[in-house]
Length: 547
Image (cartoon, rainbow, N blue to C red; front, side):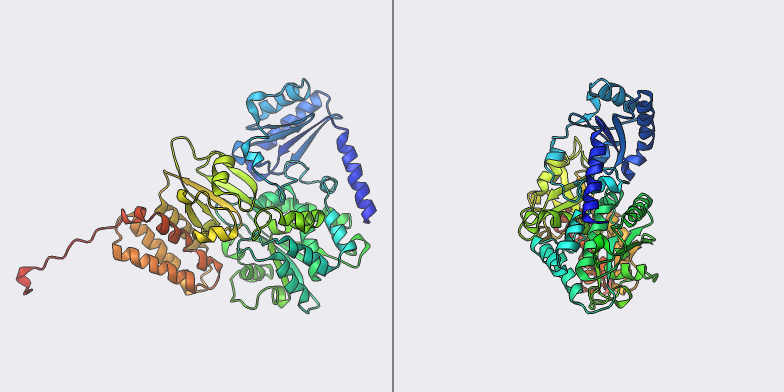
């Protein structure tokens, strides 16, 4: 495919869409599917046929619309945008008969698209979600898809592309926040006949569904970013490592790769250049430790997913000991917008040290759960109360846990903290991949710490003793605290053990596993101490010879 052919295809698709007076976009992501959006789709299709609206009304399955707790969600595009919540088959028919045919909206099911949940967000990674058909490459191209790849391979040198990513200040969204452009530059400068690009889609944090949603709703965005990474570093092969628990994401990813290859947007001589790039999928068995990059790469190669010491880093010795770029889904999804709009545009969003936006899965004791994208540096209070709508009636906000099992719990006295890499570290938490779980006054923080420690204990690969044995003993001691059987000496030993595991474990799983315990002790120590067993004072027995 040439650039002219890409632009012609985009214009043809935009023209095709304009022939419809109305478009009904129903959420076809995993969350809404579990709520019955398949039956909603069937009823919409039936009603459209019965009313003879096939030529003026289009039914489209799209990606996550954000407010997952209110699904199934449906967006109607006509003279304006109308979002409906809790749509069932009966409501679907009413939308067709009343809204599409008569122009009268079903008011009791409406959501204000200008409300705080939406108005407080800034969408870059999620810009296509809810707007395009998740399974149509034509709709992705019509929305500007693959323009950035065309620009990169026909107008930019690899070092120029990397320079643009570095100037944008994009940091890896997988958790550590390592500068993406710097990582790419190291791989580019590495001397090797073979290099690789890997996408980490092994999203395993409890309550996290950011990467899954992007792959389900906008897979081409990730493929385009990976292809540009390949061009930048001199790689011709990429792999997406995705967990088997994401069957819908895998299916749509396979379909997207097939469509891109058919149009020549992946494969040999992309845009008639000398650049070739192929992408394959590797399906993981769901081991949380495979989120660690060296364990992930071993799994891609068909070996047991266990971490190994670094250095050497994957940028020097990765897949089959070749230089390898490894970034997560959200990182690659940021590449195309940066190349299209320029590094200065991206750097102006967020903060100086943490530019851009961050996608979060907002869950827990909060009124509005779902998928959100906010500028870096946004106050935590704004996320919890403006976007999330606060905690349920009758309860008060207690803490927000960021970073999954590797993160910490942020208490209410730090509600005004900026959500960026540096600020979260000051209170013992991390950005992580983007899970954010809210706890209210009904939450027992010791029990919260025990929950995450049990997860880490179960997911430890067992390679190193500090993690394999240490997480088990931390869990047992937390259980002892909850059963009111732990003494103050046990409590002191618990804290000492957490520090030991954190400082001596081989990989990031063990090094960060104690974080929820340490942060809850730091901010909610009274919830521990009130559970401790008080040691009775020793009184010598006068008959045993004591003087």
